[in-house]
Image 1 (cartoon, one colour):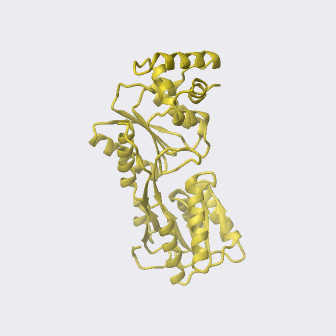
Image 2 (cartoon, rainbow, N blue to C red):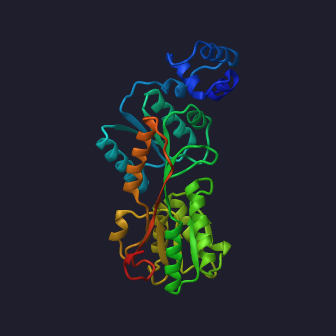
Image 3 (cartoon, one colour):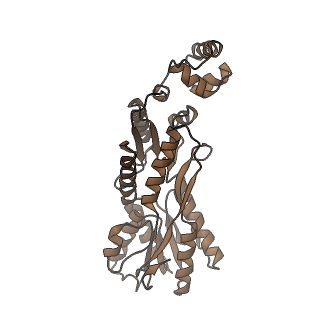
Length: 334
């Protein structure tokens, strides 16, 4: 199926010019219009949801497609986006991709057909043709929390490398040497980044990277519990389990308690992502907290800039270590 980019290439014009022709804009020369129409006919191109969404009238509505609405991180992020959008006089329509590319595409297509002014997307791991066409068509788009390789889309995300390094350094000071990690999916940018940060931190602090201490999870509680179970069955189990997100930390916590083990007496527990209920547990859970409110605010403002036709630079905010008692330490902030 031909794309807007294919039409632009054949006609020898920009994607923006094709978009103006498809939307019957007057700001196109007769020659360019004729070439675009000829390319459309030759390729058999049919305007899809992306093309129909390119217009000059504004709806004051933006779309937000998130990875998993049941994940407290995304719930808080969606709330932050809504709050900031409201201050700018914008409405938000939210779609839950449930970490599935086909469901993500369903919501992207639906939002484009509803003619949102722009789109905030927490992308799944797969670069789908629809997402690629949306980028090529020039629709105001900002990636939130995650990125996709090879697509030139501004992203608003957090960098946790320094916080992970601080966690490993702190655990080493406490005397821990056997530290395990339950990672997120390697196909997601956040999964890769957290795993790379953990391995790099171990090496930087002179700790052994033991393959049996690296468990692959999927950012869901069940995988956190399964990973913790395998780690705790090892002949030499880890002294601390570091979960790659809050849901996997919950799963690990369930497994530790089901075995009658004490935290931190028998095994320590730490989490990437902080959630409010971590502070209400006994002991409270050490976590790496992302600046969720700032992520939401900055993402909405970046998208508003794109809608206005102004360039947007990537935004990278810093996560921070929140030291509590689940690894045996005294509470405080890192």
